[in-house]
Length: 284
Image 1: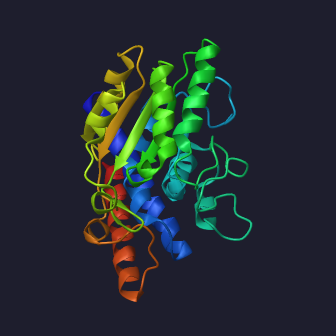
Image 2 (image 1 turned 90 degrees about the vertical axis):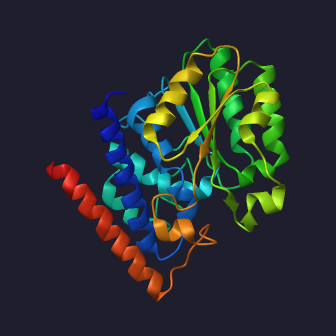
């Protein structure tokens, strides 16, 4: 990518982050940390990489995206809205009565969502199934899937990993959101220290690790992965829970936040900061 394209994706990421925090703030609670840690990956996938058609979300020739960590739906919805899958103002209905944007993804409600998710551990299995079907049909489509590092505690994930390798699913690109935390503590203290890139390599995956806040590094890793044939791919995103929001990055637990009065001020100040940054970019 040239510098213009990089700046465009960085701006897209800023817009996703801004609207994620605004919608959660309007709701008054939600999954801030894990939604924010995947913003840059979403910006690259939806802003540059995937074959999609917002005017025809069910287009049969599209690439598929599966957000296995479905509680991060508040991070995905702004990306979809900004591309025109639905109106931007619908973000303010997040998890309200009658909404089409529940906290956890529902493909029957939200245009652009390929899998209902929320029960962790199932996404890789679905992604491998879709990838296998596309292979059987001789398609050149890709399947992209984001899972959480804590989610990798689930045994079902590793069963799917073995299947992907056995079936040579080189049309599958898996992202591990390695933000080091899960619902009930750090990933290391609960499941032990894990080098996901090394582990997946031993399972036969084409494996890479990149900075999860660097759109250029993420894009280059995807490009490099597609050059490797005959193996499924994993890209480990070195992220921080609450990424891009210093207060949440430093907070011990940001998986689900119900802000107190002091935190509401911090959130509003952060929103104002991002809005000012975006205004500056638009006026540049």
